[in-house]
Amino acid sequence: MVVAIPWAELCREALDAQPYPQTLKSVTLPALPGVVDAFLQKSADPNASAQQLASTLESDSGITCELLRHVNSASYAGHARIGSVAQAITVLGLRKAKSFVTTVGIQAAMAASKTRVMNQTTFWNESLQRALFAREVACTGKLDGDVAFLGALLQDFLLPVFASEYPEEYFQYLSLAREEGFELCDYERGLFNCDHATAAAHLAHNWNLPDDLVCCIFYHHQIPFLAGHPVLGDSVCLPVAISSLLFGQMRQVRQGEERLIDLDRMTDMFDLATVCEAVDAQLQEMAQGNRVQFPLARRFRHRLSSV
Image (cartoon, rainbow, N blue to C red; front, side, top):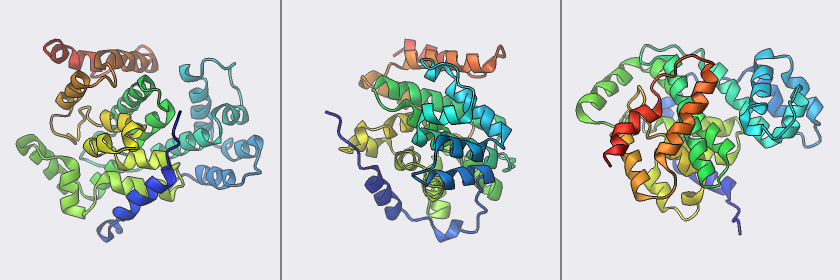
């Protein structure tokens, strides 16, 4: 029997326990593109048809193309080719369509954040790699792969904004992470009384993203808490958090990939080698013949063979 998870209650408890701090209220947070905002407002009307919802998106060719590309991807291979936004919304369902459109909008909003601290192209490539990884782990556990994908893709979306607003502080963190093994969330809480996961979850909640997606963002650096939680430990939040252990340019966690290998060895949640190969294959397909940087199978091969 599948037990329904009280996502709204869990989301409210998490955000109430860690309010958005006054110290960060001066930060200019991104705004969703107007077409995405209009879509979300229209989708709140229970009587709105798929065609009415589609009409709010069709003026933006970029979002339209991304939505059609997504719904015609291998994930939905059982459907006939989809050629209209209205059909795409029907196939995805309103909840998944809202999450995907909002994700595309967030990526567009983040593109305006310029920072010397990180390479933006590398940042989004790392986010995509984590998203594919989380989806593979979720599907292994028969959890919602779409929520896992979006949760992992969005888990760090505020980092470019914070790095743009506080470049010297984040440069200092990178130095400390290399020399003394600091972890990013601990460092951020010392600076702001808040970390990027909490701040991003509050913003996602304000944008009316689904509660399960907000929880995935909020808890993505809290694997021990999730593992011991009677409800969240068996939820899609855990694959998203596991994906956060993958190495990235911001060095967010200490010895993350070693911890990932330990999880692979001590649990039967997923097979790391199989997941890495699947993620690399999907990235190679997306790269359309270009070489994939930092393939996971190559990064883990030696360490897995020595375990």
